[in-house]
Length: 120
Image 1 (spheres, one colour):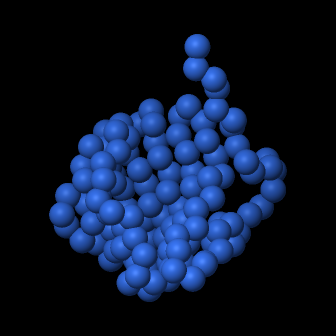
Image 2 (image 1 turned 45 degrees about the horizontal axis):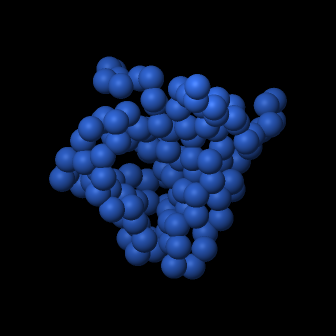
């Protein structure tokens, strides 16, 4: 029988500044998982300029919300510039990558049970 995932690493009923939950580090990508459940994960990333995540696929839809700066999200070979306050959905099973031409932070919400989200 699989071991249940811990529900969260965040305290409930507390206000957080999402952009402050992961700090920049020179020449690196810093990530911090905030929530990890069977339904999905929420992870904050801080990318130093020139860093990125190489192209890969995931079996679930994932929502990227930019918290600071500006980055590039490539989905199915098509690049999208996303800046602070903007978000983009990366559909399940479609190759995607993330590139930081400058420092930027993002929150990634992996939606394990919401494959095939409908857009508005």
